Length: 502
Length: 116
Image (tube, rainbow over the protein chains, first blue to last red):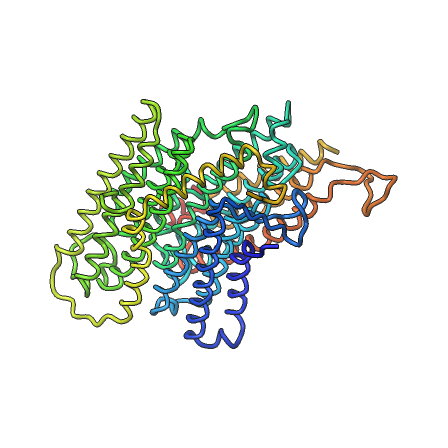
C-alpha cells in the first residue's frame, strides 16, 4: 500500500505534538528549526503527490484498511495534490516570516500553525463527508487561537464575530450531514454520488435540502455574498504570517463546493443535478461587486487585501457557475495565483506596518518605510500580479476565466464585473502605493532587524507570479487534466470505491 | 415517539436560534449550546428511530443503525470543546472590551440592560 496520502496529515500532527513536549518546547530556536524542517518535509510530500498525480493515478488510502464505503478514505487526486502544494507553500512562507521575531508575540505559535495545517491538509484529502466536518473543526479551532495571537482589543472583537459565526456554521454543517445521511444512507462521497442518482420522492427532496444547506456552510467558509462580512475585519486584525496561511481558508470553501457539489450534486446526479447552479451566478457577480467596492473604500493595506480575497472568491465562483471543464481549469489556475499573491500581499502589508511606526499599514501620509527600495519593488510586483497586469500570473488567470465564458449573457456578466473590479483594484493600489511610498514626511533612520528573512519569505510566494506565467503552458495542461479528472470522477464515482487506478 | 423527538429538536432549534440572535454574549453562547444539542439529537435520529432494539448484535431483535451513534459521539466532543472556547472567549471579550455586547460597543440608549 502506498502510504504517501496520509503523510500530509501525519507530519503536521506529529510535529504539532512534539513541539509541545520538553526537548523542543524549551527554546524558541529549536521550535523554529523543527517547525521549518517539518514544513519543508510537508512541501516535499506535496511535490511527491503532485508528481504521482500527473500520471492520472488517483491514490485512495483506506485508513486502517477498512474498505470504502464503510471505512474512511483519503483521496489524493490532481485537485487535492494541487491544493496541498499551495497549503504547504503558504505554511513554509508563513513560518519563515514569523521566525524572525513575530513568533514571540504569543505562546504556542508553532504548534497551532501545525494544527491549522493539519486541518487544511485533511480537508483537502478526505473522501468522507463527516471526516470533512472533523477536519473543518480542527482547522477552525486552530484558527480561533491563531487569530488571537499577540492579543489586543481589536483581535478580541474580531475573534468574537469569527468564532460565533463559525460555530453557527458548524451547527448548520451537522444538520446538513444528518439530513444527507438520513436521505442517502452513506457518508462516503463516491458512494453518495452513486446513491443520489437513484433517489426519488421525499428522500430526493431531503437530499436537495441537505445539498443547499451545505452551500450555506461552504459559502460561509468561502466568504460568498451575503456571508462575507466577517472577512475583512478578521483578516485585517490578525498577524501577517497567520493571515498568509488563512489565505487558503476561503479556497477550502470553494474547493468543497467543487468537490462535494461537483461530485455528489453535479452534472450526473439525476433529478437533482446542478442544484447550486441557479444560486451561483447571482452570488458570484454580487460577491465581485461588493469586494470591488470594498477595495476602493479600504483605509488600510490589510483591509484592501481582505477585500481582494473576496473579489478572488467571486471570480472563482463565476468560474464554477460557468461549469465547463475549461472554466474549472481556468478557475484552478486563478485559485493558485490568487492564493499565493494574496498571501504575499498580507505579508508585504505586515512588513510595511512594522516599519512605519504608529501609521501601521494605514493608507495615510506618514514617515517612509525604512527600506523603501526593497519593499517598494516587492509591493509593486505584488500589486501588478493581484491587479492582473501582464506579464504576471493574474493577467493569465483572469484572461482564462473570461475566455471560458460561453454565451453572450455569461460573457456580459463575467467580463463586465471582472474588468470593473480590475480597474477598481488598479485605482486602489495606485493610491495606496503612491501614498505609502511617495507622499512621505520626515526621515526613517530606524534599524531594521531580520527583514531579509521576511523579504525572502515574501519572495518565496511572489516568485510564483512570474514563474506561473513563464510556465503557464505546463500548469494549464495540469489544471485542464484536473478538470477532466473531476468530470470523470463525477461521472463514474465507482473508480474511488474500487481503490483508484488509472 | 417520532412526534416527541421531532418536537424536542424543533423547540431546541427555535430557542437556540432566538438566543443566538441576541445582542449579548451570554445568551448567544447559551443559544449555540442549545443548537448543538438540537444537532446531536437530529443526527442521532437520522439513522431512523428504533424502539426495543438490540444493544449488542442479536439475531432476534431489530438492530439500530450504529453509524449515527458514532457520529453523534464525535459531534458531542467537538461541540463541548467549541462551547468551552466560546465561553472563555466571551469572558476575555468582557475583560478586554469592557462590556458583553457581541460587537464590543455598548449603545448609550440601552443602559437599562435591554438588548438591541
